[in-house]
Picture 1 (cartoon, rainbow, N blue to C red):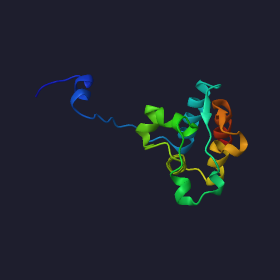
Picture 2: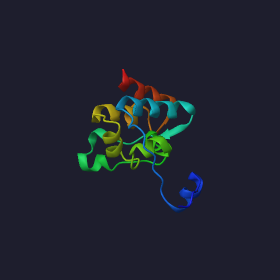
Picture 3: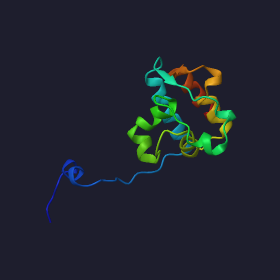
Length: 127
């Protein structure tokens, strides 16, 4: 048997470590914390989420959206966040359309929002 370091194994294989799955509250808190790290960062809002049919709404996404911030995080990505679409965020964070609309929709903020505003909306879901 040949012994290798974890770094050596990463070079030749995908290494998964066993760890507890985060709760909904932990995932949402992590998302809010990520947004709060750069409070003045400008993020793209999604346009008209409340006017789209479910299928169209579920595939909506925007470069630099609050959902993109979550996807950039290796921890949330490792927990199972697959992409930065509206539907995936709704599934992963266990949000209603109303809750996610409050976080990402342009009707509250215009085309862009500060990350601090998105973080407050995520924290509102936790209350």
